[in-house]
Amino acid sequence: MNGPFLTKLEHSGHTDVADRAAIASIVAHHRVVSARQDLSAEPGRSTVLVLLQGVMCRYRVMDGRSRRIASFVLPGDLCRLPEAPPKTSDWNIGALSRCAVGEIPIEALTALARERPNINRVLWWMTLNELARAREWLVTGTMPAPQRTAHLFCELHACLQAAGLAEGGAFRLEIGQAALADAVGLSTVHLNRTLRILREAGLACLSRGRVEIPDLAQLRAFATFDGGYLGLNGPVARTGGALHLGT
Image (tube, rainbow, N blue to C red; front, side):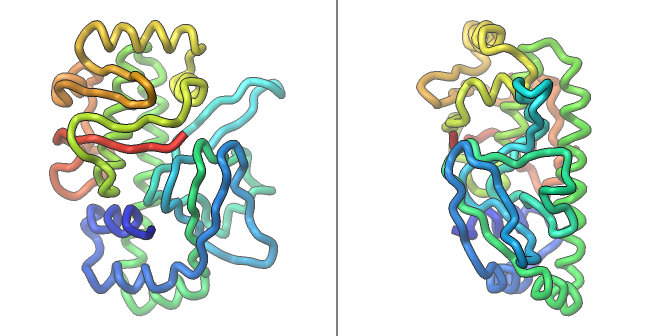
């Protein structure tokens, strides 16, 4: 179950096999979060939380009713650091599918980081990666809806490929159209029109929870997507493939 997390660490370029084995050994507890439930901290546990399976999102409810998704949390991503408990955060973290979350005790992680400097480097890399994705969403929010949606598809592909979850030019997108619409700032009606534009242009087709991308390079060109901001080691962010999500 730790596979996506360890594969993502490999693509960071900051860890070796021994580092990854050491990190895997301190993932002390797995818990399941059901779809449509928020991720909550367990009292008395000081842990780093990492998503191992499924898809979550950081979101805020606006005006007491409309949800705005600020980012997706994908397998291999950090969900929450112990310095940011839910009660002090402006954002909720909710499960969009059935999720498995790994808990790493902060004491064990701190001790490991003292022994292995690469651990500190990769934690900084993961934090900076999350910030880079947030900055990119600010920019893509000004794009026309088709390019914005295409850019999101490209980003999800690159991130999940780095977690070892990509295969070919298609991917499962089981997050639901309402969540996708909230992520790109569209109504579901406008999202459906946007998806039709991408489909009729031969760029991407979403059908029955599966996205087909005939030519990933063409989609990236249309979205002006350059995966360099993701900081992935090697060609992952710029080559074709697939990704699998949860709903």
